[in-house]
Length: 288
Image (spheres, helix red, strand yellow):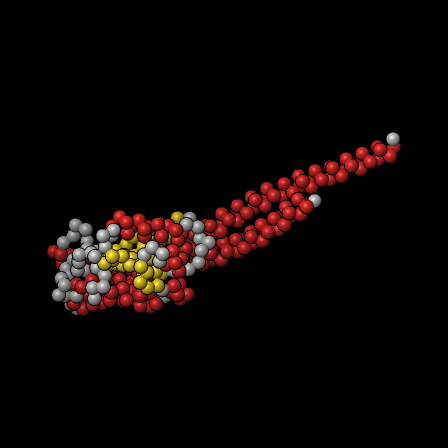
């Protein structure tokens, strides 16, 4: 009977775990819907703004506001690593950590690499191996464009004053609830159009009121939007990954509970059978 009691305790514990994972799944599903709608609505705007920025940057030189498009010899690199503040989201954080290590080893083995952590999980792990120059783990508490813009302005300043020669974003791109794609995206300098040329751009666009004023307004806004989109993508990916992980955890707990119930019923049946045999045996002994 002691064995039966142990199995009953395990079944009770698993049922409690199922309630927790099921509740977390429902919470993540509700948050995912809002985050997914936000990133889906933002992508066309961000994509078009980035395209305009790349077209515009092809016509710029360093004397006309082109500080953000000026290529430099890469000796100091800053990777902006976007992860989550909480776990229980499957391989969401580990995939970004692996991508950072892969990127550093493959592209920047001869450069000084520093990390800017957005999200506690990534910064905690990577700080053991790399220099984490700054963190902003509070951004997810109030994820708005204005708050992200402050981070973007800081990154732009670090590039403009020569602290870093290149800045890249590493984040999870949201595809669906079950799929998140690790991305390494160049933030600064502004990536020029592949195969494009300034003459083609000038023929496609008329600059009003002036090229300088457009540079001063469009480039900072586009960079802020790019960073905001990356963090929004990661935010939606986090909830999708957590919902999927909690769904799998609930399914696994259900299978384990059913298996233990079967074991419990078999053990209970065996115990009852033994008791019946003992009673029958005792009755036969009395008759003899």
